[in-house]
Image (cartoon, rainbow, N blue to C red; front, side, top):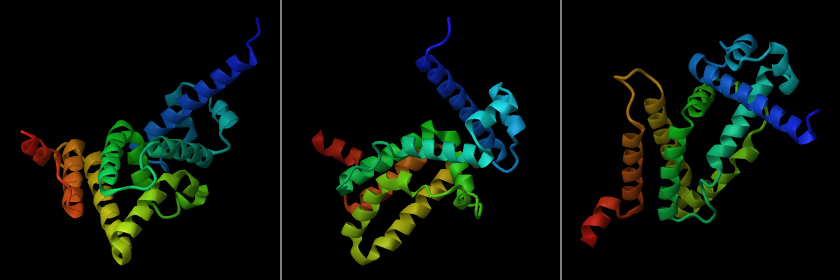
Length: 203
């Protein structure tokens, strides 16, 4: 009995995801430049030609991985009209997402320091729309200092992410420790009461 259109589409979606997952793992561990389509095919357990059925090129495959990963990362992350409290909660969720999507963040962080790699893949700005509320919040909260504060936060977050995602056991720090450090920094920055102080006051 021939498969239905829905069954064919489900198989197509599953195969495409298998290829993307295999490529993400290889890109994150070996690097985008040093990973070939042949290696991805072997990792995914599919024929090389099948990859080109779903993706025009290795760049197209990477673009799909990045847009899919950014969509998952940004979903429900920064709501509109942020307050200091909801901003800190969003940052905590961001670190949780980094832990869950470790390979994606390793890849994205590595690509972000390679000149021209992300740029040649086309605009990813639309996928970053949820971060616009963070920019608006910083403009509203810090005024003329907004850009400097954003740069500081971006540098801290990226630096901490690198410490958590790369290196050997001696040089890698636990993600929960880095998350706690950033959250404590933000509590102090915005004059918020942290969880430990709340607990002490409620007792």
